[in-house]
Length: 318
Ligand SMILES: [Zn+2]
Image (tube, rainbow, N blue to C red; front, side):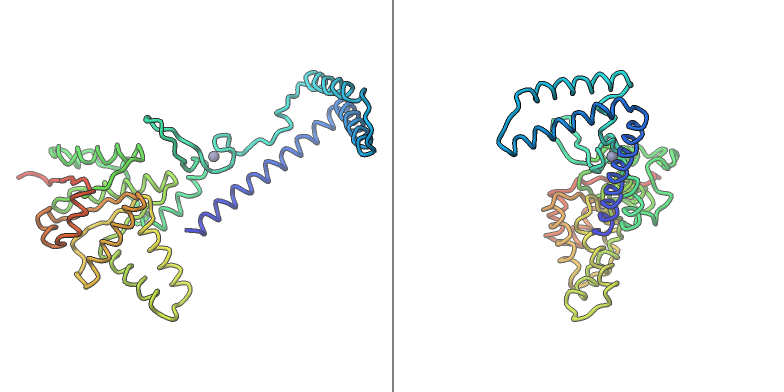
């Protein structure tokens, strides 16, 4: 993840440099165009220098300060007559919203302030987040690509879709388990949420539970071994870090993974670490709650029933 932040940092840095260059060019043009301004500025510079030299010798000249004030006024008049303002001499950021910091502060309805990536960098971040988060593997999945007919006659499923969409668009997704038979739109909703986050410059990831388990296993191997191919180590580590740290994680298809001695511990680790950091997780599963309880037993089920909202996504009746 550090590489992509470096990219953004570079872009922001370049924007600042360009803004300063643009300002310098703009001021140079002004000087060329308005010699009367150059003249008064020369007078100000000469007088300021004289004042400094005197003070170095421990002397003062009471007349300098009022003369400088007079010159400053004269400069203002010249500016006005030339149709210029102070703004002509200030750096103009590429992005007025974030002043090229890349961040904006948003205030929620409850008055809570939070920092968000400015939309000027979402465009830079989005492709990387979509790729690294495995979301670009679902190119046709997005809220605005939902087929209206899909939920026809399935009010309950349609309601869940609306709830997920609304929470996502407020960037307030909560931990949730979407459960129900296959092909009901669970993955569509979850991936659409992840896409929305990524496109808004927020790290998100979609991973099938089986692949997450595999990833945790590979990561364990790397940590335990003396040597691994550096590229592979980097790829696995950054993917595993995203799995744990992504603002929104979609764990797709819980329950189809092969059970290994580490299955439960890995899943607990992912859920607990993310919960501690306040990161949100959407789990999709074809299992109903009773089967989940049976399959994962006490601790995992306890986490889910305590801190996850359970949304049943029913299939077509009859
Ligand atoms: Zn901006």
